[in-house]
Image 1: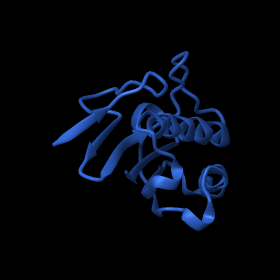
Image 2: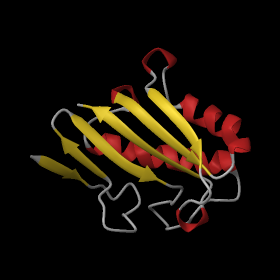
Image 3: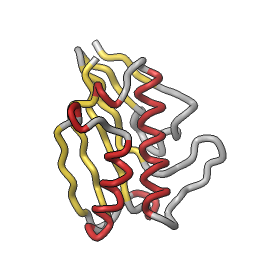
Image 4: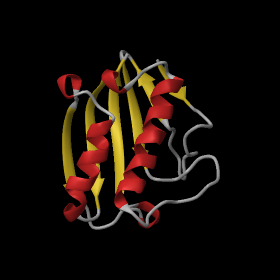
Length: 126
């Protein structure tokens, strides 16, 4: 059985998917972009601000399920330009405790939805 997680504190899906799904002992969080759920503003002008909004969206979804970044076991980061890696890594790392940081891969892709520069998905353990 699966449980759908929805919160007004993260962007509504822009397609046929949910913000997150709990299945068994895991929560699978859909890729988040830098869309501000409060005003609908899409942040793409500066990679650190963009990454901060992405992480805040992920945090809101985790919080909705009474979880935190310490529960995250796997992360995937998609970048439109690998030259942004160090800036994204700096912001991403500021949300995590190094001793409990999840497994992760970061990949460059040719294009991301609605022209964003970074998208991050996560898997968390309940």
